[in-house]
Image (cartoon, rainbow, N blue to C red; front, side, top):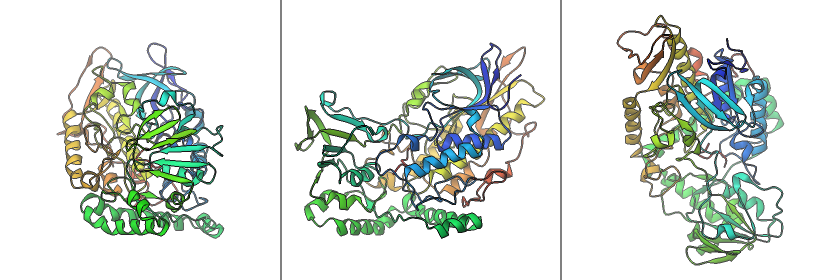
Length: 556
């Protein structure tokens, strides 16, 4: 017998057992937990390595941290928030929203904090996952990995860094005990985090030096406070918030054609970005250093109305070269520029195409997910990997976005997760009897990946003339989705059992049972009508029973 509400039962060896183990408590993990409860599944746990929920919005607390997706689109459709303080909300508001979701949907009883997953191994005899955490061991029928691509900061290997006498930290591990006032500070990198940090700390430090390997395209961020009247209207008339969300969604869906099929159309946006630069940067030499040589959109387009004015300050220097080495307290750039500093802040991104969690997942053949993905990440519909039965990922390969909200993609994958679990339930309860697992067929994974990569060839991310974190070590784009969010929603509405191998365990005999898809499977269900949960337009509906989309870097 198994206990309900995520308390866990016991497996055949007396170990704690749950039906589903969710890894991570960011948007993906909390969204999965909400969906499990709405599907009537309460025998699950959410394993979180930190001491609180929030994922990347808990970890990134640097000065100026905010989202570059509008607030009303960067939230769950089933948990609309009429009280967003700004059109582009800051980190504290987003983290507070995630805490609110955990409370409102009764998720606290399922969440286990300070429980870092150290290893997950598939037991082919028992058809379940053995999970080792920092807080103990358990087993689970299904694992939903929602660690996200913005979980583990990437620190470059710089000669001499270990001997640097000053302070060093990554933007995602900000040291709030270190006082930057009056210090000479080096900011390494010009990504989404850096362009928020630079204007936030420039007025405080004695001198700020920005090391820029590649300049970004920057557009103004039209951020403003949301008025009391607007909030009142959204609370009293929820359809007004849904309409606002729908408009934000629709505008971004219309942009996809330029990103994915006709990158030359982005020239107009380039002109706007150049005009934005010219307004703040009067020095022609500095403008030349800040002007990218690649097509806008190839790297992530950044939003800021304060970045260029900060670079124009007399106490801010731009080194248009990457950091080469460190000699004592002197930073040496690739172009030979030397700068003495007291502190170094690395805004160098995350392990996106080489996520560390992949080293901790051991599949049916004894191979780690990292080994399976050594030639490039690929997963069927961004969710399941061949050789790893009953394992799913949220924000998996080729599910990232370059212009819209990742929450839309997360909700689509939650639809797929829900139908996956329904099919497992029906197959396990059929006349064939015994436990059951679903494993993605290698042929289905390869076919999906070939289709995605073929579509990627025309996109600005592959043709724009840049090197970005969207690309893996082999130069393949295994990060971004080359289509609209509505299209992805349709592709993940339900599970096609023809793409899966069904594996069963029987009481007297454990064997692999091939299932023909020519005839209907016993108990198979059509897609749950609730799976649309926001319609193709991702409109907020408020949910059916409760009130109130890493790495792909939404922290920007």
